[in-house]
Image (tube, rainbow, N blue to C red; front, side, top):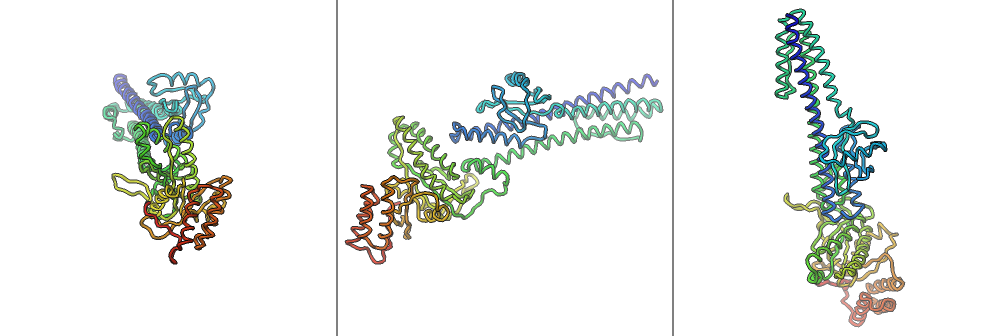
Length: 551
């Protein structure tokens, strides 16, 4: 009877254990493969988002911006690694390593077979020799960078859980066979019923894939040990499965969190500022009062220009113009607040404050004028209309933050200082100057950047529309011509005399400035004004303020 019953018990037990092992191994391997594929998909999606940002903002042709996007892909790859042995890397079509979260230490002979695998379609899960060891990987080809991007793991680590299950299954199976033989030797009937229930539990697990199913421990003997071992095996499998699900869930949450933050800032904040905020999401921008520098830039006679160009030519010209202007602003640590038709509004000092924000804003304005000159050279080559711009800057306290509704919000600044900056831009036409800065910005520059090397020329004191208090306005340059080096100091001396009501002496200074700069609009304008005031003095309460009738 022993020889008849023993095969009937051992054979089903062995088959059940083997089937359970195969199901468990397939399940673990499938989950590991799905997690690897999930991370690969997230990485591909992130890379596509980075490229879309470059394309949408016309940065795809700029090597430094493309390089920044590649660095962002690399950083994101590091953030989704789950083990020290996992490596994300990219190679180009020539087999050259172009990006890696850790050095894979390629051997020369490993590149050709790896490239053969990567050049095949629908590779799926692959294994190849990398760095002298077998690694399992999945990959995709990212066309914008011409990269093959791979997520790899050591083969022994990738299949470690499966091998552990194999060992545990072998141990469990051997224990079950030994227990069955011993129990059959002692008492066949006592052994038959518990083993039958164990087999039923195994079949239930295989059928339902419910690893939480437990086997009742009925006796403190071999069948009880078998039941405990089986429960331990299923418990470990269930724990591993839960851990994989938790890792996948955490990865999804992190991806959503990052995507949400990027959506908030990507339209108005440079990428390096975004990365700083990722480290401290709790410091998301809120309303704040602070002093900063504001710039307004506008294309003169834009309506006339737009009427003379076809729509596609107009859009093309504007895109190239904006590209050059925005590059200057970003390179000088500013941000573009908004586009207002053909005008640009930019700020320095928010969301990130620098000690030299005032100086950077003025240097940006001067370089924007130089950028327009380069743009116009290309326009002449294309036979298109040239652009002339006016730039106005102011420094003062504003309210800065996210303003709008839940459907549409803008990170912007508001306040009188913003309005005055806009007025400065408008006054460039009146005073026939490419750039004007306010008295408050001039004072800030004198205090924070006394050795900037900039040259200033006081043009007037004006009260812009809607205001009665006068504001002194200056034009500024990096370098002066020989004639300007002689004329500007004399002009500024004339302004001092003008404000002390010494109009005849001031007129002589402006006349002297005109001798160096014939037909200079501002020197001539002040010369004529002084002659008029010398013959017909202004009222005693005159403070040198000119009331502007328009912006």
